[in-house]
Length: 74
Image (cartoon, rainbow, N blue to C red; front, side, top):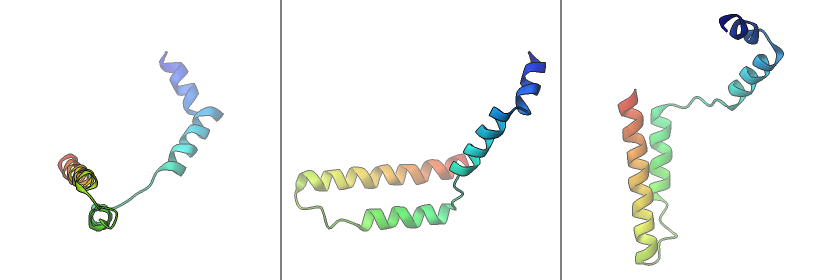
């Protein structure tokens, strides 16, 4: 079985998969993520009633949790 995985590493399919993964990879700093989160949280022009206010609060809470999780795993 180990031999098969070694052969796969050099196959055309493996090279194509690796290339697609690199093309889809985005490197972004934590400070850039925090700036994006701040921009999204500050965009509250669409909040016009209690329902959308709760929706906005949920979005903000989710974004805060995202940043907290990224900090924790690094």
